[in-house]
Length: 162
Image (cartoon, rainbow, N blue to C red; front, side, top):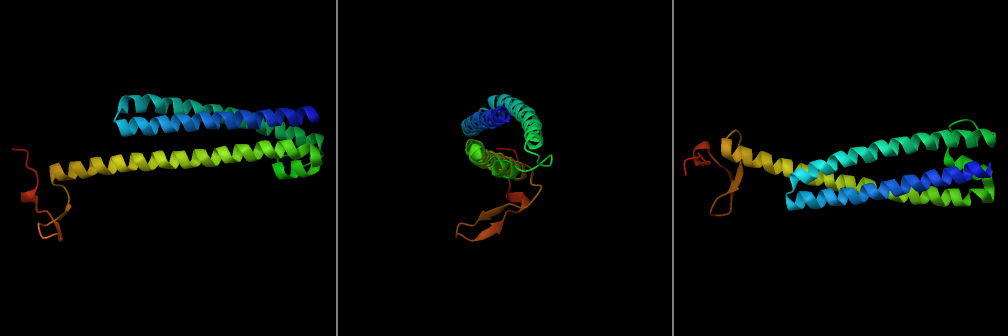
């Protein structure tokens, strides 16, 4: 049983390390977007998919080890980590620490992904704004010289002739 606990701690540690590597990749993607290096951004997106695949494999190993540990502790299969830690008593302290560290990394990953998603949405909105301004397909909010909000009429929009 002690061996299974160690292996589970190693899996949580591997998961945490992979998540932290993923966070660094997300930060790099954010910087490439800021720098306008969209080809590099696309390459990094493919690397991101590799991280996602790796995390799924680690999660499968975690589930297998958790189920094995549940069986050794006479707990129902699929029991929560908290139930496992409670059954282990003092031996479960290191396991709980590794779970906590992993959860902190996952929270940071969630924040980084949300940040990148906001950046992408901003870029897409900006592209939409530019297209609307050039094609005249929808009203654009602007300000008059007096500082009042108004919509541009189609004839006032860019017509492409200079």
